Length: 160
Image (cartoon, rainbow, N blue to C red; front, top):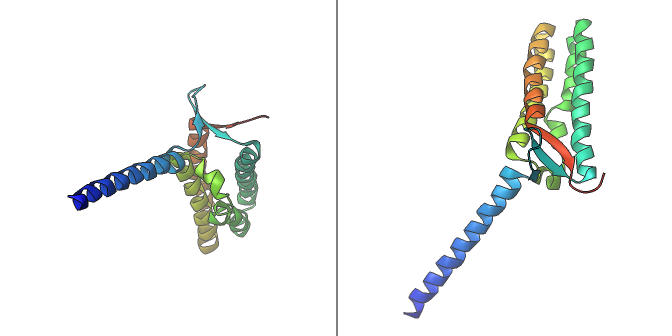
């Protein structure tokens, strides 16, 4: 009888632990730290220093794309590859884990995909030396940037 009682207690404890883990995964992996939608976009709430990291990465994307367009105008696929490479997955690994945990899954998925796109642009520009292909790839990547900016805004969680 005592063994059955202990087994029930253990199952209840295991069940509660599993629910807790599922809740934490939902909060820190899927939902992130978000606020109310004001203009139809989900607001991602970050500390000012974290917000600066995310916005800085976006500015790097924008600057890199602008420079790649100039390289394309010169028909310089090697320069496109050189400019795209640092925007690839190597840059994604620089995001602190604590910050990544606050970002919604869809936002992280889009960002990850953009980093992968830059790796692909760099590899293809080197391998194929085809500036027109690089421009098409940049156009596809920019669609992801536009979709992300249409869906999300980054706001400080505290103070300016």
